[in-house]
Amino acid sequence: MSLEELYRYERGYMEPNNEGARERFKQLVGFFKTLNLPMEGRVLDLCAGTGIAGVALAKAAGAEALTLVDVREEDLERHAEWLRMAGISPEVRLVRGDVREIAELVEEHDVALLFGNTMVHFDPFDAVRIFAGVALRLSDGGVFLIEDTDRVYRILYALGYKEFFVESRGEGYALASVHEGYDIGKGVFKRSYYLLPGFRKVGEFNFHHWDLATQLAIGKIFFWEAELMRPGREGFSRLSDVLIFRKPRKKVAKEILESQTE
Image (cartoon, rainbow, N blue to C red; front, side, top):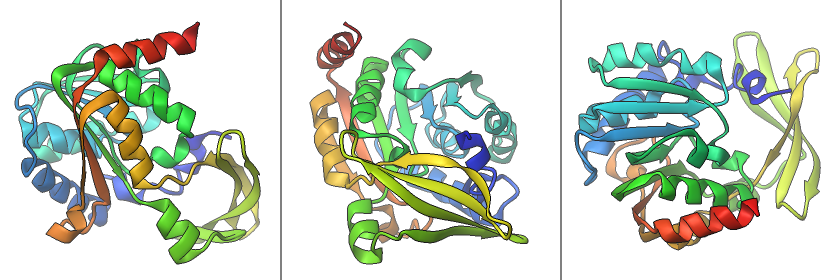
């Protein structure tokens, strides 16, 4: 089963017709305006979904071009709804592909973002490829933004890891996950997802529960500057924590990617 199937039941935060998602969009635009980002440039949205974050950044930065990348083609087609809401019309390119191969999928951009707490889908080896690929495809003054939450603290400590957990509820259904194992070589927890009632299996997925410090440390390998911001403390209640990486170290990125293909 694919992530497309899973996100049919966990997508309220990026649906244009969802009131909470529309409020998140407004907060994203406001937050991006507080950052010192390249203006009127090219925006690259990774794991873009419906394009909510990429369009918000394009509006805030007056971007001339917007590239949306995701494996879920069905979601990508929804970007036009956010563009209409934002009242902007940048040059748009849709790319259906794996962000771990981003260096092969796109050309140079000025700002890249990976929003929506999606790092959980990537293990540490994936993360190295993503950071390297993004660094290689950013301009010299480029910026990489990641929105995520510290799952080591929140899930493994504050909440406690659950063998069985109801992930979300919709009209007439609930989506629950069950622990299936742990891959020590990749550092990923394996979980199966089921729809209730009826216990219909949606699929099996691997998750790596990141802490933010590790992401900052990996980012420092590929960028000269790394910073953690906490939008929630500034009134942006619908955003998680944001990691900001500036000034890509392209030589390092190129060497890492080339070493992994040898």
